[in-house]
Image (cartoon, rainbow, N blue to C red; front, side):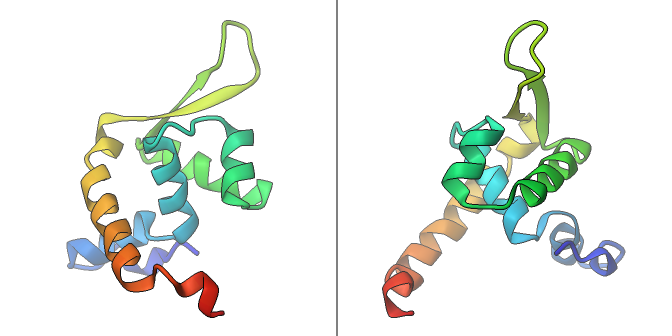
Length: 111
């Protein structure tokens, strides 16, 4: 869930979390940064509901993190391509992922 109450805080981390701190937004952005740019492929790989993915893609486009581009001329199907702004998040997201691998790598088997 997007935490709009955090968007107006003095802390830059709180403002960032208020804009893109939702787990599905971060995972969607991570997928796009790693070459998964089509809706159907994202939905299948992430296991996210279509309505949630659609909402998060719209938000990421509106925030300037993804560009929505037709797959081919005249096509209704699109791909979602990371912008330069999104590429600035690759390193922090990779560090967050690496931290999770170190500390939660066996979490799926512990449930």
